[in-house]
Image 1: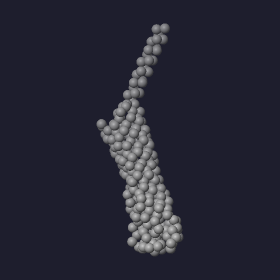
Image 2 (image 1 turned 120 degrees about the horizontal axis):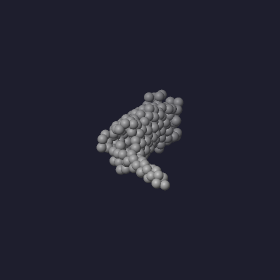
Image 3 (image 1 turned 30 degrees about the vertical axis):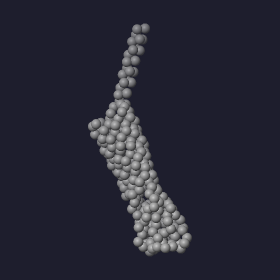
Image 4 (image 1 turned 90 degrees about the horizontal axis):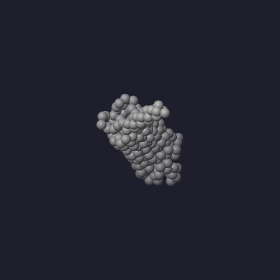
Amino acid sequence: MKKEWGWLAALAVAMTGWSWSAGAQEARPLWTGFYVGGEAGAGFASYVYGNMTPNYFNTAGIQVRGTGVTQSASNVVGGALAGYAWQVGPFTVGPEIGVRSGGFLAQQPDPFFPTTDQVKSDIRWMASAAVKLGWGRDRWQVFAKGGWAGALADFGLYDNSTTVTAESTTWVNGWTAGVGADYMILDRLSLGVTWDYADLTAGSVGLNCPSCGVGVGFNSPVVDTHLRLNAVMARLSWHFAP
């Protein structure tokens, strides 16, 4: 009987030690402090331009042929990020900022005059500032983030038969949200993946069109913009000592 009690005591001590060790690993402050990194992946953009005023590109005489244009594009995306994390037990919180490349060129016939006109959209670059909330165990961390996002976007209408053009380069603001996971492959180097979504809008954007003229069937376009961006990114980050 004493032998059985001895085995049970040894097992209880071992389990207590394992539990303490697991808890210590969970609370290990691997994620505390400043970090910087780079990221690369695939991005997908959709452009919706609505409430377009009567103008040279959507009006024939007094007839307005339409007020909205929709486009989409995808491309490889690269960027840089930086942030700071406070860790309490397994939980982390802190700000994260980032910039990304653009290159989401969408080009198609103008839906109002498809035989002569074209519509082009593009995003030059993007930026974000978010609050990141994480939960870690040992070298793993999962996280969610949300905050502000913006992009520098181009929109243009082109009449190939007369060379009349209407263009605008506009900064568009909105919000972003995302989820992801990181793994500390070395003591200060983490590798991760994230999915991000951004929803950006701007109202009453005027396009510059010196040759559009004035009056019925002419005028320069004024539109509302709505951009949606999705990105799946791999990220590599260096974590400085707290």
